[in-house]
Image (cartoon, rainbow, N blue to C red):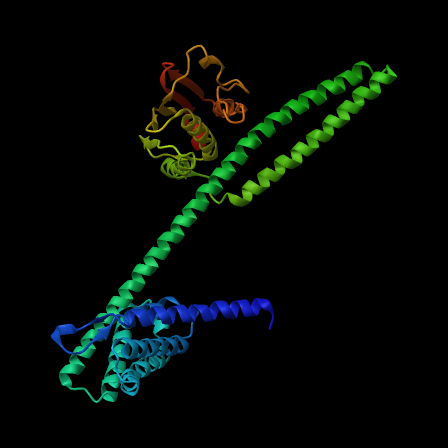
Length: 421
């Protein structure tokens, strides 16, 4: 047997041992219903819950190991703690082992797991199985009467119901975790694609610049084609630029193909956009070790087709605000609209911008941010990025600040450039 199979076998055996230990320990928690002398353990509820949640484990194996675990634990406690006789203790606890073995057989025969999505049917099967096993155990102990049978059946329904309700709670929690994980991945995917869309914007812009350079190079070739030396150099430049253009084109098409594979929807509501950005921003703030409040408000929940552009614009402005904020500052993102335009405001209570600097903040490479540890400055392309995209959408961006506290970015975007109308 290879190491991989041995590893899997070890993990499987470990699961069975841990489960049997848990049931055995809970099997020592008792309750006495209706002031009777009958004692019922909580271990059966845990055992039922495991049967319902662990489809990958054999009912018979679980039942035998749990019964054996309960049997051993009760014998150890009876002999070492209560100082009972060895033979008497083993004889007294042996019916508990029989109880779990019969329980496993009945669960296997009735196929409880197959019908566990049917609430009433599953509870009924668990209750009847529990009751039947308890009656058999009582018969073995030669201690049974009609009143005991009534109590056993009633407790069977109680334990079956509690176990199934625990199973429903477990499933609900599991679904919540799965949905949370799905939402997180969905958020990350949308942010990834929005960043790719932004890079594509610049690739397309560079393509136009390359076309212009290539045109100028060829024009020079035409001008100096009678000069052998200059003709060859200008022609070489034109050829090299043409190769660069082809490389850019391949990269651009690769981006577009990748995005087309990811994009299942061509539109998204503003409320969903805000939810995704808020989730991402909350994590970013936490990673930044800052205590910054953030809120999102909208006048009307519209559907945007060019929603990746909104991701890029709003994300960049929020990150810019976070960088300028300290603990206890606040960021507010709001939306309102009129007949033709949609307006966004990103306002923060962080450090302001001097009035004489405002005209330059959208220039590529301009920055006031420095890493005091490394001495390096920011790239300064975030705001120029935002401005380019907004202008490409036919909109405009304005900045307001008193130079001391707080900055407000006001965005104006035509409705038809976002909704495709």
